[in-house]
Length: 102
Image (cartoon, rainbow, N blue to C red):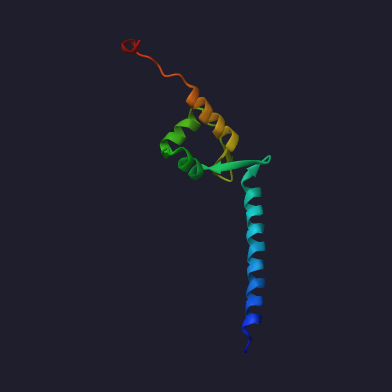
């Protein structure tokens, strides 16, 4: 089978357009899967990287009720707005002064 260069380039452009359509479709599916009520959900790995904390620290924040979480099919998720609220509250906590620092 012989095809000339122009036909080959046209064929490759069609293939690449199909890949672009598939890529957009996959992004839409991923966005739908990782949202609840239109809000982005983050998993443990997302939070560990975002907050630069250990697994144990994340578990402690969940256990203490400081960071709300949701379990979906056995996997833990966090609403992005809850994470933002957690960060704001963490920064607003005044440092305890000791008697020596007064």
